[in-house]
Image (cartoon, rainbow, N blue to C red; front, side, top):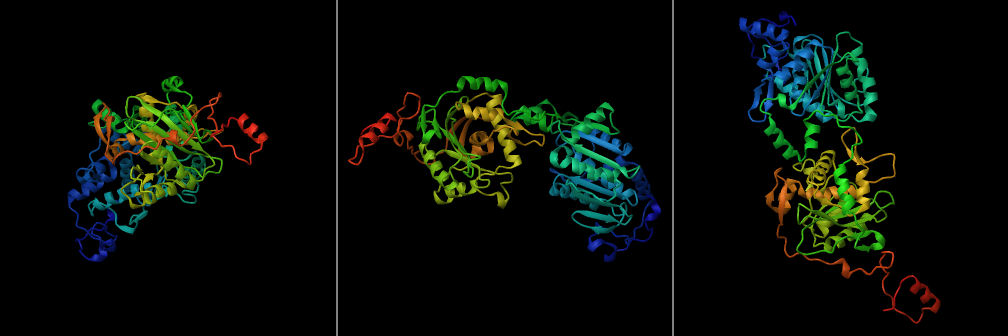
Length: 573
Protein backbone atom coordinates (compact mmCIF):
# COMPACT_ATOMS: atom_id res chain seq x y z
CA UNK A 1 0.00 0.00 0.00
CA UNK A 2 1.28 3.46 -0.90
CA UNK A 3 1.15 6.01 1.88
CA UNK A 4 0.03 8.66 -0.61
CA UNK A 5 -3.35 6.95 -0.89
CA UNK A 6 -4.19 8.88 2.29
CA UNK A 7 -4.92 12.61 2.29
CA UNK A 8 -2.51 14.67 4.41
CA UNK A 9 -4.52 17.53 5.82
CA UNK A 10 -5.89 19.03 8.99
CA UNK A 11 -8.30 16.65 10.70
CA UNK A 12 -11.98 17.43 10.05
CA UNK A 13 -14.81 16.75 12.44
CA UNK A 14 -17.67 16.92 9.93
CA UNK A 15 -20.12 14.03 9.93
CA UNK A 16 -19.66 13.41 6.21
CA UNK A 17 -16.17 12.18 6.95
CA UNK A 18 -17.61 9.08 8.66
CA UNK A 19 -19.83 6.24 7.50
CA UNK A 20 -23.33 6.81 8.93
CA UNK A 21 -21.75 9.18 11.43
CA UNK A 22 -19.82 6.34 13.16
CA UNK A 23 -16.50 7.79 14.36
CA UNK A 24 -14.90 4.34 14.06
CA UNK A 25 -15.75 4.15 10.34
CA UNK A 26 -13.96 6.88 8.40
CA UNK A 27 -14.79 7.29 4.72
CA UNK A 28 -12.49 8.33 1.90
CA UNK A 29 -13.44 11.93 2.67
CA UNK A 30 -12.07 11.80 6.22
CA UNK A 31 -8.91 13.87 6.65
CA UNK A 32 -6.21 13.46 9.27
CA UNK A 33 -3.03 15.06 10.45
CA UNK A 34 -0.24 12.47 10.60
CA UNK A 35 2.75 12.59 12.88
CA UNK A 36 6.10 11.11 11.82
CA UNK A 37 5.46 8.24 14.26
CA UNK A 38 2.14 7.42 12.63
CA UNK A 39 3.74 7.35 9.19
CA UNK A 40 6.44 4.98 10.45
CA UNK A 41 3.82 2.69 11.99
CA UNK A 42 1.75 2.68 8.79
CA UNK A 43 4.81 1.66 6.80
CA UNK A 44 5.84 -0.97 9.34
CA UNK A 45 2.32 -2.42 9.62
CA UNK A 46 1.92 -2.68 5.86
CA UNK A 47 5.15 -4.68 5.58
CA UNK A 48 5.08 -6.67 8.82
CA UNK A 49 2.06 -8.85 9.56
CA UNK A 50 3.19 -9.70 13.10
CA UNK A 51 3.86 -6.05 13.99
CA UNK A 52 0.37 -5.13 12.80
CA UNK A 53 -1.21 -7.96 14.78
CA UNK A 54 0.54 -7.36 18.09
CA UNK A 55 0.21 -3.57 18.04
CA UNK A 56 -3.18 -2.96 16.49
CA UNK A 57 -5.35 -6.09 16.27
CA UNK A 58 -8.12 -6.18 18.91
CA UNK A 59 -9.85 -9.30 20.19
CA UNK A 60 -12.68 -9.75 22.67
CA UNK A 61 -11.10 -11.34 25.74
CA UNK A 62 -13.56 -13.26 27.94
CA UNK A 63 -11.97 -11.78 31.06
CA UNK A 64 -10.78 -8.35 29.92
CA UNK A 65 -13.22 -7.45 27.16
CA UNK A 66 -11.69 -5.78 24.10
CA UNK A 67 -7.93 -6.01 24.26
CA UNK A 68 -4.89 -6.10 21.97
CA UNK A 69 -3.89 -9.64 21.11
CA UNK A 70 -0.72 -11.18 22.49
CA UNK A 71 0.44 -13.77 19.98
CA UNK A 72 1.85 -17.09 21.12
CA UNK A 73 4.83 -18.65 19.35
CA UNK A 74 2.66 -21.22 17.61
CA UNK A 75 0.36 -18.50 16.28
CA UNK A 76 3.30 -16.49 14.97
CA UNK A 77 4.54 -19.63 13.21
CA UNK A 78 1.23 -20.09 11.43
CA UNK A 79 0.96 -16.41 10.46
CA UNK A 80 4.45 -16.52 8.92
CA UNK A 81 3.40 -19.58 6.94
CA UNK A 82 0.36 -17.67 5.69
CA UNK A 83 2.54 -14.79 4.64
CA UNK A 84 5.08 -16.94 2.82
CA UNK A 85 2.96 -19.67 1.15
CA UNK A 86 0.03 -19.70 -1.28
CA UNK A 87 -1.68 -22.83 0.00
CA UNK A 88 -1.81 -23.28 3.75
CA UNK A 89 -3.54 -26.01 5.75
CA UNK A 90 -3.52 -26.02 9.54
CA UNK A 91 -4.40 -28.92 11.84
CA UNK A 92 -5.43 -27.21 15.04
CA UNK A 93 -6.54 -28.17 18.51
CA UNK A 94 -9.67 -26.51 19.82
CA UNK A 95 -9.32 -23.06 21.35
CA UNK A 96 -5.88 -22.20 20.00
CA UNK A 97 -7.02 -19.08 18.17
CA UNK A 98 -7.22 -20.44 14.63
CA UNK A 99 -10.23 -18.26 13.84
CA UNK A 100 -8.38 -15.22 15.19
CA UNK A 101 -5.44 -16.00 12.89
CA UNK A 102 -7.84 -16.12 9.95
CA UNK A 103 -9.19 -12.70 10.90
CA UNK A 104 -5.74 -11.15 11.38
CA UNK A 105 -4.58 -12.22 7.95
CA UNK A 106 -7.84 -11.20 6.25
CA UNK A 107 -7.86 -7.72 7.79
CA UNK A 108 -4.14 -7.10 7.18
CA UNK A 109 -4.51 -8.07 3.53
CA UNK A 110 -7.57 -5.86 3.07
CA UNK A 111 -6.06 -2.80 4.76
CA UNK A 112 -2.62 -2.75 3.20
CA UNK A 113 -3.21 -4.08 -0.30
CA UNK A 114 -5.35 -2.40 -2.93
CA UNK A 115 -8.13 -4.17 -4.83
CA UNK A 116 -8.02 -7.42 -2.87
CA UNK A 117 -11.06 -9.66 -2.46
CA UNK A 118 -11.05 -11.80 0.68
CA UNK A 119 -13.73 -14.48 1.04
CA UNK A 120 -14.35 -16.23 4.37
CA UNK A 121 -16.21 -19.54 4.00
CA UNK A 122 -17.65 -21.62 6.82
CA UNK A 123 -19.90 -24.67 6.97
CA UNK A 124 -22.77 -22.63 8.42
CA UNK A 125 -23.90 -19.09 7.66
CA UNK A 126 -24.03 -18.10 11.32
CA UNK A 127 -20.47 -19.35 11.81
CA UNK A 128 -19.29 -17.25 8.86
CA UNK A 129 -21.15 -14.20 10.22
CA UNK A 130 -19.51 -14.68 13.64
CA UNK A 131 -16.04 -14.84 12.05
CA UNK A 132 -16.73 -11.71 10.02
CA UNK A 133 -17.96 -9.98 13.18
CA UNK A 134 -14.47 -10.42 14.62
CA UNK A 135 -13.00 -8.79 11.53
CA UNK A 136 -15.41 -5.87 11.89
CA UNK A 137 -14.57 -5.37 15.58
CA UNK A 138 -10.86 -5.43 14.83
CA UNK A 139 -11.31 -2.95 11.95
CA UNK A 140 -13.36 -0.55 14.07
CA UNK A 141 -10.75 -0.64 16.85
CA UNK A 142 -7.89 0.27 14.48
CA UNK A 143 -6.77 3.91 14.74
CA UNK A 144 -8.57 5.88 12.02
CA UNK A 145 -5.28 7.15 10.64
CA UNK A 146 -4.11 3.57 10.06
CA UNK A 147 -7.02 2.12 8.13
CA UNK A 148 -8.45 2.87 4.69
CA UNK A 149 -11.89 4.42 4.69
CA UNK A 150 -15.19 2.59 4.28
CA UNK A 151 -17.27 2.54 1.10
CA UNK A 152 -19.80 -0.12 2.17
CA UNK A 153 -20.19 -1.74 5.58
CA UNK A 154 -22.65 -4.51 6.43
CA UNK A 155 -23.27 -7.68 8.40
CA UNK A 156 -21.83 -9.99 5.75
CA UNK A 157 -19.35 -7.83 3.82
CA UNK A 158 -17.43 -4.59 3.74
CA UNK A 159 -15.83 -2.62 0.90
CA UNK A 160 -12.92 -0.31 1.70
CA UNK A 161 -11.82 2.86 -0.03
CA UNK A 162 -8.70 1.16 -1.40
CA UNK A 163 -10.89 -1.20 -3.42
CA UNK A 164 -10.38 -4.21 -1.14
CA UNK A 165 -13.31 -6.14 0.31
CA UNK A 166 -14.03 -8.84 2.87
CA UNK A 167 -17.11 -11.05 2.52
CA UNK A 168 -18.51 -14.37 3.68
CA UNK A 169 -20.08 -17.46 2.17
CA UNK A 170 -21.18 -20.94 3.24
CA UNK A 171 -19.96 -24.31 2.08
CA UNK A 172 -22.74 -24.88 -0.42
CA UNK A 173 -22.04 -26.53 -3.76
CA UNK A 174 -22.15 -23.15 -5.54
CA UNK A 175 -20.14 -21.15 -3.00
CA UNK A 176 -18.14 -18.44 -4.72
CA UNK A 177 -19.09 -19.65 -8.18
CA UNK A 178 -18.55 -16.97 -10.82
CA UNK A 179 -16.43 -14.74 -8.53
CA UNK A 180 -12.70 -14.09 -8.42
CA UNK A 181 -10.87 -14.09 -5.11
CA UNK A 182 -7.41 -13.15 -3.85
CA UNK A 183 -7.61 -14.80 -0.43
CA UNK A 184 -9.92 -17.70 0.39
CA UNK A 185 -10.29 -18.57 4.07
CA UNK A 186 -11.98 -21.91 4.88
CA UNK A 187 -13.04 -22.63 8.43
CA UNK A 188 -13.48 -26.22 9.73
CA UNK A 189 -13.26 -27.89 6.32
CA UNK A 190 -13.21 -31.31 7.99
CA UNK A 191 -16.81 -30.81 9.13
CA UNK A 192 -18.40 -30.28 5.74
CA UNK A 193 -20.73 -33.18 5.00
CA UNK A 194 -19.08 -35.59 2.59
CA UNK A 195 -21.95 -35.41 0.11
CA UNK A 196 -21.31 -31.66 -0.25
CA UNK A 197 -17.55 -31.40 -0.03
CA UNK A 198 -16.62 -32.54 -3.53
CA UNK A 199 -19.08 -30.22 -5.27
CA UNK A 200 -18.04 -27.44 -2.92
CA UNK A 201 -14.35 -27.92 -3.70
CA UNK A 202 -15.02 -27.98 -7.43
CA UNK A 203 -16.81 -24.66 -6.97
CA UNK A 204 -14.25 -22.78 -4.85
CA UNK A 205 -10.89 -24.08 -6.07
CA UNK A 206 -11.15 -22.46 -9.54
CA UNK A 207 -11.54 -19.10 -7.76
CA UNK A 208 -7.95 -19.38 -6.62
CA UNK A 209 -6.36 -21.31 -9.47
CA UNK A 210 -7.21 -18.50 -11.91
CA UNK A 211 -4.49 -16.37 -10.29
CA UNK A 212 -0.82 -17.02 -9.66
CA UNK A 213 -0.80 -15.05 -6.43
CA UNK A 214 -4.13 -15.89 -4.80
CA UNK A 215 -4.00 -17.78 -1.51
CA UNK A 216 -6.02 -20.38 0.38
CA UNK A 217 -5.98 -20.70 4.16
CA UNK A 218 -7.66 -23.79 5.66
CA UNK A 219 -7.80 -24.43 9.40
CA UNK A 220 -9.72 -27.22 11.08
CA UNK A 221 -9.81 -29.64 13.96
CA UNK A 222 -9.63 -33.29 12.81
CA UNK A 223 -12.77 -35.21 12.00
CA UNK A 224 -11.97 -38.69 10.78
CA UNK A 225 -9.98 -39.83 7.78
CA UNK A 226 -12.50 -39.88 4.97
CA UNK A 227 -12.78 -36.20 4.11
CA UNK A 228 -11.05 -33.58 1.99
CA UNK A 229 -9.26 -31.96 4.94
CA UNK A 230 -7.54 -35.20 5.90
CA UNK A 231 -6.64 -35.89 2.28
CA UNK A 232 -5.04 -32.46 1.76
CA UNK A 233 -3.26 -32.45 5.12
CA UNK A 234 -1.86 -35.99 4.93
CA UNK A 235 -0.58 -35.41 1.38
CA UNK A 236 0.98 -32.11 2.46
CA UNK A 237 2.95 -33.92 5.18
CA UNK A 238 4.25 -36.36 2.56
CA UNK A 239 5.12 -33.61 0.09
CA UNK A 240 2.59 -35.04 -2.36
CA UNK A 241 0.93 -31.67 -3.07
CA UNK A 242 1.85 -27.99 -3.02
CA UNK A 243 0.30 -27.25 0.37
CA UNK A 244 2.15 -25.99 3.43
CA UNK A 245 1.04 -28.05 6.45
CA UNK A 246 1.11 -26.56 9.95
CA UNK A 247 0.02 -28.05 13.24
CA UNK A 248 -0.86 -26.43 16.56
CA UNK A 249 -1.22 -28.70 19.61
CA UNK A 250 -2.93 -27.97 22.90
CA UNK A 251 0.30 -27.86 24.91
CA UNK A 252 1.67 -24.99 22.79
CA UNK A 253 -0.69 -22.55 24.47
CA UNK A 254 0.84 -21.13 27.69
CA UNK A 255 -0.85 -22.36 30.85
CA UNK A 256 -1.90 -25.70 29.38
CA UNK A 257 -0.12 -28.49 31.19
CA UNK A 258 -0.92 -32.00 32.39
CA UNK A 259 -3.14 -30.60 35.13
CA UNK A 260 -5.08 -28.60 32.53
CA UNK A 261 -5.42 -31.77 30.45
CA UNK A 262 -6.73 -33.76 33.42
CA UNK A 263 -9.22 -31.03 34.31
CA UNK A 264 -10.40 -30.82 30.70
CA UNK A 265 -10.88 -34.60 30.48
CA UNK A 266 -13.00 -34.41 33.63
CA UNK A 267 -15.11 -31.65 32.11
CA UNK A 268 -15.55 -33.47 28.80
CA UNK A 269 -16.22 -36.78 30.49
CA UNK A 270 -13.70 -38.99 28.70
CA UNK A 271 -10.20 -39.18 27.25
CA UNK A 272 -11.70 -40.11 23.88
CA UNK A 273 -13.56 -36.79 23.79
CA UNK A 274 -10.33 -34.95 24.68
CA UNK A 275 -8.40 -36.73 21.93
CA UNK A 276 -11.05 -35.71 19.42
CA UNK A 277 -11.36 -32.05 20.46
CA UNK A 278 -7.83 -31.24 21.63
CA UNK A 279 -5.54 -34.14 20.75
CA UNK A 280 -5.38 -33.57 16.96
CA UNK A 281 -6.13 -37.25 16.42
CA UNK A 282 -7.76 -38.44 13.21
CA UNK A 283 -10.18 -41.00 14.61
CA UNK A 284 -11.14 -43.62 12.06
CA UNK A 285 -14.76 -43.50 10.83
CA UNK A 286 -16.86 -46.52 11.58
CA UNK A 287 -15.58 -46.63 15.14
CA UNK A 288 -18.19 -48.30 17.30
CA UNK A 289 -19.46 -46.70 20.48
CA UNK A 290 -18.65 -49.72 22.63
CA UNK A 291 -15.19 -50.93 23.60
CA UNK A 292 -14.25 -54.59 23.23
CA UNK A 293 -13.82 -54.91 26.99
CA UNK A 294 -17.40 -53.72 27.55
CA UNK A 295 -18.69 -56.22 25.00
CA UNK A 296 -16.84 -58.99 26.83
CA UNK A 297 -18.58 -57.93 30.04
CA UNK A 298 -21.99 -57.99 28.35
CA UNK A 299 -21.41 -61.61 27.34
CA UNK A 300 -21.58 -62.34 31.06
CA UNK A 301 -24.44 -60.01 32.01
CA UNK A 302 -26.80 -60.91 29.12
CA UNK A 303 -29.71 -63.04 30.25
CA UNK A 304 -33.25 -64.01 29.37
CA UNK A 305 -35.92 -61.71 30.84
CA UNK A 306 -37.62 -62.79 34.03
CA UNK A 307 -41.00 -61.53 32.78
CA UNK A 308 -42.36 -61.01 29.27
CA UNK A 309 -45.44 -58.83 28.78
CA UNK A 310 -47.40 -57.25 25.90
CA UNK A 311 -46.76 -60.11 23.48
CA UNK A 312 -43.00 -59.84 23.90
CA UNK A 313 -42.78 -56.04 23.62
CA UNK A 314 -42.18 -55.38 27.33
CA UNK A 315 -39.32 -57.29 28.95
CA UNK A 316 -38.37 -57.21 32.64
CA UNK A 317 -35.27 -58.59 34.30
CA UNK A 318 -36.19 -57.40 37.77
CA UNK A 319 -39.24 -56.45 39.81
CA UNK A 320 -39.77 -52.77 40.75
CA UNK A 321 -38.56 -52.03 44.28
CA UNK A 322 -39.48 -48.82 46.16
CA UNK A 323 -36.06 -48.58 47.82
CA UNK A 324 -34.22 -48.32 44.51
CA UNK A 325 -33.55 -45.38 42.18
CA UNK A 326 -34.58 -45.80 38.55
CA UNK A 327 -34.16 -43.67 35.46
CA UNK A 328 -35.99 -43.95 32.15
CA UNK A 329 -34.85 -43.05 28.62
CA UNK A 330 -37.34 -42.83 25.78
CA UNK A 331 -37.03 -42.69 21.99
CA UNK A 332 -40.30 -42.02 20.13
CA UNK A 333 -41.19 -43.19 16.61
CA UNK A 334 -44.20 -42.76 14.31
CA UNK A 335 -45.39 -46.35 14.66
CA UNK A 336 -45.44 -47.23 10.97
CA UNK A 337 -43.40 -50.42 11.18
CA UNK A 338 -39.97 -48.85 10.63
CA UNK A 339 -38.24 -47.16 13.57
CA UNK A 340 -39.59 -48.18 16.97
CA UNK A 341 -40.66 -46.42 20.13
CA UNK A 342 -38.42 -47.65 22.94
CA UNK A 343 -38.35 -47.29 26.72
CA UNK A 344 -35.17 -48.22 28.62
CA UNK A 345 -35.36 -48.55 32.42
CA UNK A 346 -32.09 -48.48 34.37
CA UNK A 347 -31.43 -49.09 38.05
CA UNK A 348 -28.94 -46.39 39.14
CA UNK A 349 -29.13 -47.07 42.89
CA UNK A 350 -25.49 -48.19 42.89
CA UNK A 351 -23.47 -46.13 40.39
CA UNK A 352 -20.72 -48.72 40.45
CA UNK A 353 -23.21 -51.26 39.09
CA UNK A 354 -25.88 -49.67 36.88
CA UNK A 355 -28.33 -52.36 35.76
CA UNK A 356 -30.72 -52.57 32.84
CA UNK A 357 -33.98 -53.78 34.38
CA UNK A 358 -36.60 -53.34 31.64
CA UNK A 359 -37.03 -52.60 27.92
CA UNK A 360 -40.16 -51.82 25.96
CA UNK A 361 -40.04 -51.73 22.16
CA UNK A 362 -42.79 -51.52 19.54
CA UNK A 363 -42.60 -50.30 15.93
CA UNK A 364 -46.35 -50.18 15.30
CA UNK A 365 -47.68 -48.19 18.27
CA UNK A 366 -48.73 -44.65 17.36
CA UNK A 367 -47.49 -41.74 19.55
CA UNK A 368 -50.89 -41.19 21.19
CA UNK A 369 -51.15 -44.82 22.31
CA UNK A 370 -47.46 -44.87 23.18
CA UNK A 371 -47.99 -41.96 25.57
CA UNK A 372 -50.50 -44.06 27.52
CA UNK A 373 -48.12 -47.02 27.51
CA UNK A 374 -45.26 -44.79 28.72
CA UNK A 375 -47.39 -43.44 31.59
CA UNK A 376 -48.27 -47.01 32.54
CA UNK A 377 -44.64 -48.17 32.54
CA UNK A 378 -43.46 -45.07 34.43
CA UNK A 379 -45.99 -45.94 37.13
CA UNK A 380 -44.52 -49.45 37.35
CA UNK A 381 -41.16 -47.99 38.38
CA UNK A 382 -42.34 -45.33 40.82
CA UNK A 383 -42.55 -42.48 38.28
CA UNK A 384 -38.78 -41.92 38.04
CA UNK A 385 -36.84 -39.15 36.27
CA UNK A 386 -37.47 -39.61 32.54
CA UNK A 387 -35.54 -38.28 29.53
CA UNK A 388 -37.89 -38.33 26.55
CA UNK A 389 -36.61 -37.27 23.12
CA UNK A 390 -39.00 -34.60 21.84
CA UNK A 391 -37.85 -34.40 18.20
CA UNK A 392 -40.60 -34.85 15.60
CA UNK A 393 -43.51 -36.90 16.98
CA UNK A 394 -41.82 -37.09 20.38
CA UNK A 395 -42.96 -33.54 21.08
CA UNK A 396 -46.60 -34.56 21.47
CA UNK A 397 -45.61 -37.31 23.91
CA UNK A 398 -43.56 -34.90 26.03
CA UNK A 399 -46.18 -32.15 25.98
CA UNK A 400 -48.98 -34.51 27.03
CA UNK A 401 -46.82 -35.86 29.85
CA UNK A 402 -45.98 -32.39 31.11
CA UNK A 403 -49.08 -30.33 30.39
CA UNK A 404 -51.96 -32.82 30.55
CA UNK A 405 -50.69 -35.36 33.05
CA UNK A 406 -48.47 -33.00 35.05
CA UNK A 407 -45.43 -35.28 35.07
CA UNK A 408 -42.75 -33.19 36.81
CA UNK A 409 -39.69 -35.41 36.57
CA UNK A 410 -38.89 -34.75 32.92
CA UNK A 411 -35.31 -34.06 31.86
CA UNK A 412 -34.79 -30.76 30.03
CA UNK A 413 -31.77 -31.09 27.73
CA UNK A 414 -31.22 -28.96 24.64
CA UNK A 415 -28.28 -27.35 22.77
CA UNK A 416 -29.15 -23.80 23.89
CA UNK A 417 -31.39 -24.06 26.92
CA UNK A 418 -31.11 -20.31 27.56
CA UNK A 419 -32.83 -19.51 24.25
CA UNK A 420 -36.62 -19.34 24.29
CA UNK A 421 -37.16 -21.63 21.30
CA UNK A 422 -35.28 -24.41 23.10
CA UNK A 423 -36.86 -23.76 26.48
CA UNK A 424 -39.13 -26.80 26.42
CA UNK A 425 -39.28 -30.00 28.45
CA UNK A 426 -37.74 -33.12 26.99
CA UNK A 427 -34.51 -33.91 25.17
CA UNK A 428 -33.86 -32.12 21.89
CA UNK A 429 -31.67 -34.46 19.83
CA UNK A 430 -29.17 -32.10 18.20
CA UNK A 431 -25.59 -32.64 17.03
CA UNK A 432 -24.31 -31.18 20.31
CA UNK A 433 -26.71 -32.94 22.68
CA UNK A 434 -26.31 -36.26 20.91
CA UNK A 435 -22.52 -35.93 21.05
CA UNK A 436 -22.68 -35.18 24.78
CA UNK A 437 -25.07 -38.07 25.25
CA UNK A 438 -22.80 -40.55 23.48
CA UNK A 439 -19.74 -39.25 25.34
CA UNK A 440 -21.57 -39.59 28.65
CA UNK A 441 -22.72 -43.12 27.83
CA UNK A 442 -19.22 -44.18 26.81
CA UNK A 443 -17.84 -42.87 30.08
CA UNK A 444 -20.10 -45.13 32.13
CA UNK A 445 -20.01 -48.10 29.75
CA UNK A 446 -16.43 -48.07 28.43
CA UNK A 447 -14.28 -46.25 30.97
CA UNK A 448 -15.92 -47.20 34.26
CA UNK A 449 -17.43 -50.41 32.88
CA UNK A 450 -20.16 -50.17 35.50
CA UNK A 451 -23.18 -50.73 33.23
CA UNK A 452 -24.71 -54.21 33.08
CA UNK A 453 -26.88 -54.81 30.03
CA UNK A 454 -29.19 -57.83 29.96
CA UNK A 455 -30.98 -57.31 26.64
CA UNK A 456 -29.27 -59.01 23.70
CA UNK A 457 -30.99 -56.73 21.17
CA UNK A 458 -29.67 -53.59 22.89
CA UNK A 459 -26.13 -54.96 22.72
CA UNK A 460 -26.57 -55.92 19.07
CA UNK A 461 -27.61 -52.36 18.25
CA UNK A 462 -24.60 -51.00 20.13
CA UNK A 463 -22.29 -53.11 17.98
CA UNK A 464 -23.55 -51.35 14.85
CA UNK A 465 -23.84 -47.87 16.38
CA UNK A 466 -20.91 -46.09 14.73
CA UNK A 467 -19.29 -42.72 14.34
CA UNK A 468 -19.44 -41.15 10.88
CA UNK A 469 -16.80 -38.89 9.30
CA UNK A 470 -18.83 -35.76 10.03
CA UNK A 471 -18.71 -36.61 13.75
CA UNK A 472 -22.29 -37.85 14.10
CA UNK A 473 -23.32 -41.18 15.59
CA UNK A 474 -26.04 -43.48 14.26
CA UNK A 475 -26.76 -47.01 13.13
CA UNK A 476 -24.34 -48.35 10.54
CA UNK A 477 -25.67 -47.89 7.03
CA UNK A 478 -25.87 -50.72 4.54
CA UNK A 479 -27.23 -53.25 7.01
CA UNK A 480 -30.70 -53.82 8.42
CA UNK A 481 -30.05 -52.11 11.74
CA UNK A 482 -31.70 -49.59 14.01
CA UNK A 483 -30.48 -47.48 16.90
CA UNK A 484 -33.78 -46.96 18.77
CA UNK A 485 -32.72 -49.03 21.77
CA UNK A 486 -29.32 -47.30 21.82
CA UNK A 487 -30.80 -43.80 21.79
CA UNK A 488 -33.20 -44.69 24.61
CA UNK A 489 -30.22 -46.10 26.54
CA UNK A 490 -28.24 -42.90 25.93
CA UNK A 491 -31.08 -40.75 27.25
CA UNK A 492 -31.59 -43.04 30.26
CA UNK A 493 -27.97 -42.34 31.26
CA UNK A 494 -28.02 -38.62 30.41
CA UNK A 495 -29.37 -37.99 33.92
CA UNK A 496 -25.81 -38.74 35.09
CA UNK A 497 -24.47 -35.74 33.15
CA UNK A 498 -23.57 -33.29 35.91
CA UNK A 499 -25.83 -30.36 35.03
CA UNK A 500 -28.84 -32.66 34.81
CA UNK A 501 -27.96 -34.76 37.85
CA UNK A 502 -27.80 -31.65 40.03
CA UNK A 503 -31.38 -30.72 39.05
CA UNK A 504 -32.95 -34.06 39.89
CA UNK A 505 -30.78 -35.63 42.60
CA UNK A 506 -28.69 -34.80 45.61
CA UNK A 507 -25.09 -35.76 44.78
CA UNK A 508 -23.70 -37.20 47.97
CA UNK A 509 -20.29 -38.12 46.57
CA UNK A 510 -18.35 -37.59 43.31
CA UNK A 511 -15.62 -39.67 41.67
CA UNK A 512 -12.15 -38.47 40.61
CA UNK A 513 -13.58 -37.10 37.36
CA UNK A 514 -16.21 -35.08 39.25
CA UNK A 515 -18.95 -37.39 38.06
CA UNK A 516 -21.64 -38.52 40.53
CA UNK A 517 -20.65 -41.55 42.58
CA UNK A 518 -23.49 -41.67 45.10
CA UNK A 519 -26.97 -40.18 44.72
CA UNK A 520 -29.96 -39.46 46.85
CA UNK A 521 -33.26 -38.94 45.06
CA UNK A 522 -34.89 -35.58 45.78
CA UNK A 523 -38.20 -35.70 47.59
CA UNK A 524 -41.04 -35.50 45.08
CA UNK A 525 -43.41 -37.03 47.59
CA UNK A 526 -44.01 -40.70 48.26
CA UNK A 527 -43.14 -42.85 45.28
CA UNK A 528 -46.16 -44.75 44.01
CA UNK A 529 -45.48 -48.12 42.41
CA UNK A 530 -48.02 -49.99 40.31
CA UNK A 531 -46.34 -53.34 39.88
CA UNK A 532 -46.76 -54.86 36.42
CA UNK A 533 -46.99 -58.22 38.15
CA UNK A 534 -50.48 -57.24 39.34
CA UNK A 535 -51.58 -56.22 35.84
CA UNK A 536 -50.23 -59.08 33.76
CA UNK A 537 -50.28 -62.85 34.09
CA UNK A 538 -46.74 -63.84 35.06
CA UNK A 539 -46.87 -67.62 34.75
CA UNK A 540 -44.64 -69.08 32.06
CA UNK A 541 -45.15 -71.99 29.68
CA UNK A 542 -42.55 -74.60 28.85
CA UNK A 543 -40.89 -72.39 26.18
CA UNK A 544 -40.59 -69.34 28.40
CA UNK A 545 -43.64 -67.53 26.98
CA UNK A 546 -46.28 -66.28 29.38
CA UNK A 547 -49.41 -68.44 29.65
CA UNK A 548 -52.40 -66.59 28.13
CA UNK A 549 -54.87 -64.98 30.54
CA UNK A 550 -57.34 -67.24 32.35
CA UNK A 551 -60.81 -67.56 30.87
CA UNK A 552 -64.23 -68.75 32.09
CA UNK A 553 -66.51 -71.40 30.52
CA UNK A 554 -69.69 -69.87 29.11
CA UNK A 555 -72.86 -71.52 27.87
CA UNK A 556 -72.12 -70.36 24.35
CA UNK A 557 -68.78 -72.14 24.19
CA UNK A 558 -68.70 -75.22 22.03
CA UNK A 559 -66.80 -78.24 23.36
CA UNK A 560 -64.53 -78.23 20.33
CA UNK A 561 -63.66 -74.60 20.88
CA UNK A 562 -62.80 -75.24 24.50
CA UNK A 563 -60.56 -78.14 23.58
CA UNK A 564 -58.68 -75.90 21.13
CA UNK A 565 -58.25 -73.17 23.75
CA UNK A 566 -57.05 -75.60 26.39
CA UNK A 567 -54.58 -77.02 23.89
CA UNK A 568 -53.23 -73.50 23.38
CA UNK A 569 -52.59 -73.05 27.09
CA UNK A 570 -55.75 -71.35 28.34
CA UNK A 571 -57.11 -72.42 31.76
CA UNK A 572 -60.54 -72.42 33.42
CA UNK A 573 -61.19 -69.86 36.16
